[in-house]
Amino acid sequence: MKIDVSKELKRLDGQPMQDVGADGNAVNATVKMALLNAVLAPEKDDTPIRKLEKGELARKIYNAEKEVELTAEEISLCKKRIGEVMPSPLVVLQVTEILEQKEGNREET
Image 1 (cartoon, rainbow, N blue to C red):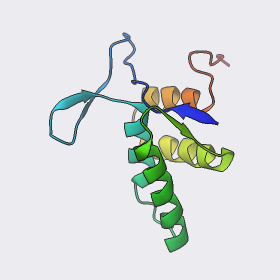
Image 2 (image 1 turned 90 degrees about the vertical axis):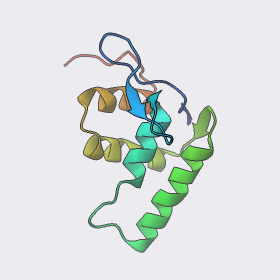
Image 3 (image 1 turned 45 degrees about the vertical axis):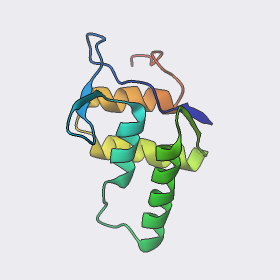
Image 4 (image 1 turned 135 degrees about the vertical axis):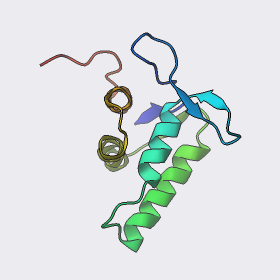
């Protein structure tokens, strides 16, 4: 499934979320940034094989300029890690909606 990793994450008021770029300056936060942070965050039970898989996935996401083709397994891992690593429910919601391609269409339960 193709995922647009260039999408900017938004605050509740619709303004772009801010993050710190590699140069230390503020930049608009993107799906790519959130996914990379989530996938690269260490897990206590990571095996060498799992670290390799996560490293390859991170490189795949990093090298994507706009869209990245992810397998169902990769999407599942991204969703799991976003939920575990990201402190902001708003980031978790937006990235999960994009990964599930339900952007802005999540039904309330």
